Amino acid sequence: AAKKRDVALAKTLYLESGGYAEAIQLIGANKCGKWEEEILDILEMVPGKNDLAIAAATSVFEGSEVDQQQLEKLYSLTGNSTQLLLHYTRNNKFSEARQLFEQNQGQIDSNGILAYAKMLITKGDTLGAFEIYCQHGRYDIGFRTMKDLLSTAVTMEAFEDARTTLQQWYTVASSHAKIAISNASNESNLKYYNMGSIAFQAEIYHMYHFIHQYCTEPFTSTHPETLLNISSLLHNSISSCNVSDGIS
Image (cartoon, rainbow, N blue to C red; front, top):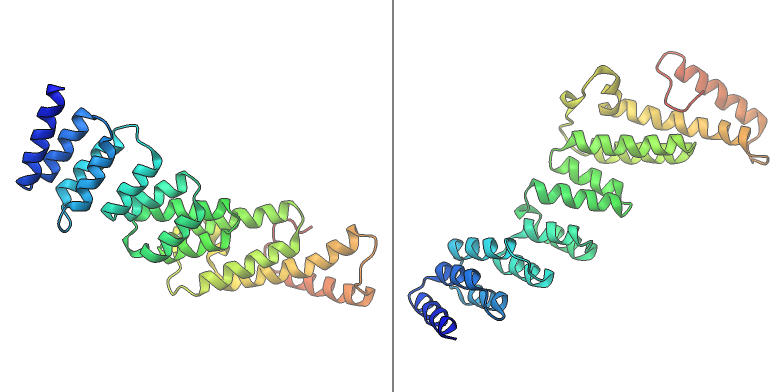
């Protein structure tokens, strides 16, 4: 009881003299009662932005086992958009993460951006993740992500999906003035950084879709004459260039 009185007295003295960081460190060192709420209350009463108080509170909270809601409130109070976004992504709070990202994108560092993009991929919004990667100059990761999505479509012989992926790839990537061609690790990857090549590959998969459909499905609406014309066009298109993955 005497120790609690001494801690309470010291905390009061610190607060009265403007020693907010010292009061927070004292509370964190003793952890009596609802100490998390005490620290949050101090942060709410601090005039303006006190970097020392924020650093002290963050250090105490992140070094202790605290309730996730309390941690979330800490990041909200301190305006730490990156840590709050990382908190949301770790706890699969997609709606909150999306709202925070849209409202505070300029205040979020690369760690938060990459975590949010990965969350978009897990939610099936690969195109949204690709656009974020491009917006923030991470063309290498973005293009690799789209390449993986394309590879999945081709492996499943979903050639129309492959075409759609490439079209989306082209639309987003071409809207950015600077495409990081220098990020291509070798010559075989250069086609993934060339807008003209991406558009061409999309049309190749679109044509091959009809041929594959005719060969694998018992009933199709494609007329033989149309199929012959598509085959001739496809043959002429790929005769002078590398054959796209999955086309035989």
